[in-house]
Length: 395
Image (cartoon, rainbow, N blue to C red; front, side, top):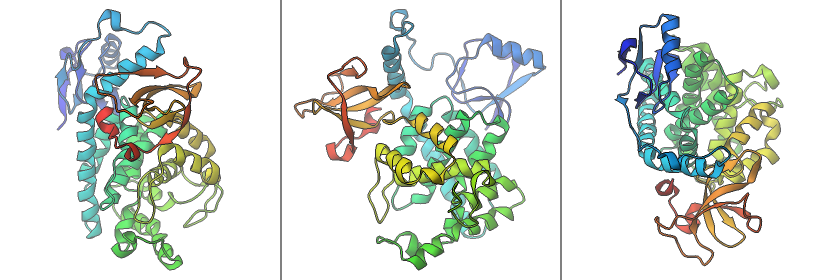
């Protein structure tokens, strides 16, 4: 529930557990971010008397960083380690928010399957919470979207994951904040037409026949019809359900639209949808690790997507995303905790398994900056299951 806070009660340095909003679509400050004096002065100039938040006021949500711990200018490695330690402290809160969003969309999809109207208030609240949490915490949400799924209940997880990746792309292209809520809802509901596809096709363990795939290809039309008749939702949300399988080269479906004839939201969601599908295990194939999914998109699918948006998305993930596992030429295995934008092949690594194959204890922290270790390099990305590692416990 949103709570109003009077301008006179705001003080510089205040932090909130959820984002603070000037209007429902205009964020003042993100969760766990300090309010600045300039923010308060801006509100006074604009004549704003109160702001809203669904969170609580917190002054010291995390331990303060001691003066001698603060990274000096250019000390990028130390800053990355500090950010990683912060991530380790707050991860559970955002995993709980992620689970809550999945549960919420799950009930919306069940209602839709039985021809009941979309609960607009509920879907907007889910979108609102996601956006306010993702923007200041992209790394942890990239990790969640890249790893969270349920093979037996795929659609709700896929819907939220696609929304997360779509918000990250939209933020990078500086989309109008007023449009962010509708983009997020569009991404969440993009596959709603799948609720009309027979379960025996969706759960089939073998590859689909041509006839079965043609039935699957009807889901954009089903989704469009379901959303277009709902007067509480804008037309651009229904359009994404219809267009998210169109391809930039004109070889998609159902209408074979080409280039920018496909609307912007649909071009964003198409990338997020494909990447998430690749990185999740399906009934008929194993999942791709992030590195392989990116290679696959670039080598086999690059003409399918808006090239500008695709470049933005892949560069934001980086070749080795945060929390991905890599093997070094020394045979050690480490988890990526940060990377230099100009040195994507030489990220900062936390060693998990040493060169002798021994698992390090949590207290045995070994951080290696590959940009400083010329004799070490990554030989490949690895799957956490191959080493019995749960990266969420390490993030």
